[in-house]
Image (cartoon, rainbow, N blue to C red; front, side, top):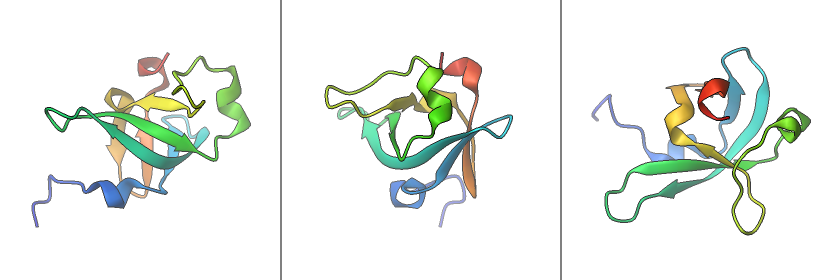
Length: 86
């Protein structure tokens, strides 16, 4: 298996944290660009109260979105750079 590839099913359910360790919630789903297959957003599941004061984009159904461009590391957790979200 190619070590540079991460499969979407490996990301679902992982905890999302900031670089400083603040918990955002879990990965509920992923939003892709249909044409290119590029990963655009992570849909947040079980959001923590920490993200209430952040102005995060939401779907029309109220699902909270985190831009995938803010992700700086994936492993046991998905680490995002808060400055890249706001």
